[in-house]
Image 1 (cartoon, rainbow, N blue to C red):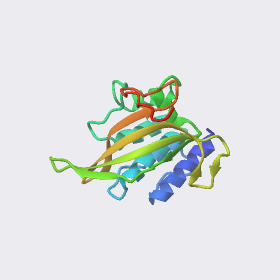
Image 2 (tube, rainbow, N blue to C red):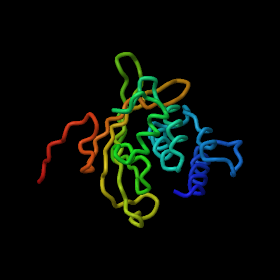
Image 3 (tube, one colour):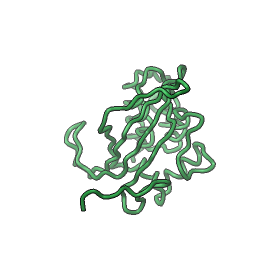
Image 4 (spheres, helix red, strand yellow):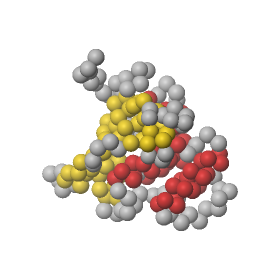
Length: 195
């Protein structure tokens, strides 16, 4: 990805969030990403989109650091040990890792169903989102919201509410449909209903 794209992409992301960044436009994408913090103003889906978009901006290290800021203290992705921003960045850069999908330039994200909200027995507010990760060939997007692509993975993304920080990622169940990664780390193959 061109460095200019990363800068513009992150600046647009900040503007959409209403973040007034003291960072000059010539500064690095990482310094722009470092301006983004969890907020009680964001919905669960907006917090998820921010994390996914951060990996698309061309600065994997900055994106991984943003993921850590939006992570619940008990969150870790499967098979990344020890957990932390450097380990996540290494996994995302590794083409043999299912997590490399996060930086694929053809990636589009959809939330195909309504969020499911619940309160645990301990009184903790949680929200679950189905996140569909599509690989869309260049030129296959019809306008800003229409897409025609291959479902590469489906994620069950659970966030937990923190009164001072907003929605934090608690757990991600990653079911991969790409032949090289099927069914995904720690997942079981889903039975095929048709064919």
